[in-house]
Length: 125
Image (cartoon, rainbow, N blue to C red; front, side, top):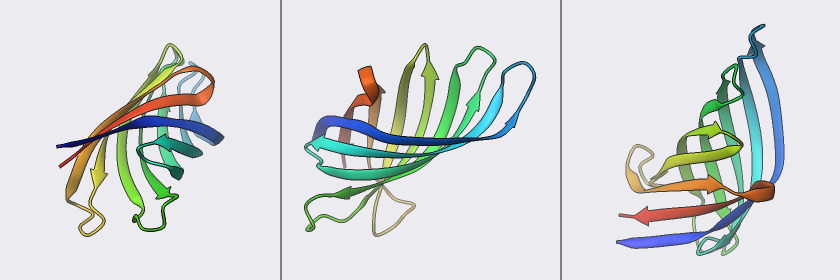
């Protein structure tokens, strides 16, 4: 099994509220760009759907496309399921195969740190 580690930095976050309630809960959609460093180098764009709770915590799902800096590598597609609790975002994700979008080529996770930086860990099949 191959394991890839590194960090990514959020470079932009554009979030739009789709609906909201008086109790502070809301549904939102966000488009996020990030820069990857480590065993994956490149830029990505993520499209999240977020469900915020009155407490300010949230759950989210989304798809991310990483475009590696090395033009020899194909774009990488991730399918995210995560949460935002007490200011920390974390996600479990599946790395989808570029040949068969339903096939899983690996799994991974990230956990956010300070200033929009997060560590990623990916296990390839």
